[in-house]
Length: 130
Image (spheres, rainbow, N blue to C red):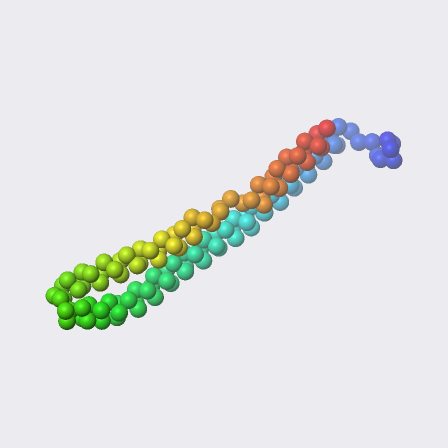
């Protein structure tokens, strides 16, 4: 015995280190799966909201566009009023879509917790080898 601890062979220590390392790697993989699943859910939510927003905007704008075209058609040729209203609607739709596309770009897909724990695990393994 050394310092009240049972003395173990190098083979036993290496076997324990290998087992601990394998267990640690499995836990890291599970953490990465959970974290990436959460990120995927966030992306799915944003895509769903983009789709819903687009569908609602489309349905509502159809009636408004028709009304505005008819109103402007009282003062100018109907084809010109349709062209003007169509351009305004397209510009507005583009602006709204870009806001949500930018929100998707801001989502960070990096599994930060996993990266941090991998750094800690590397340090732990270095300490175990001393």
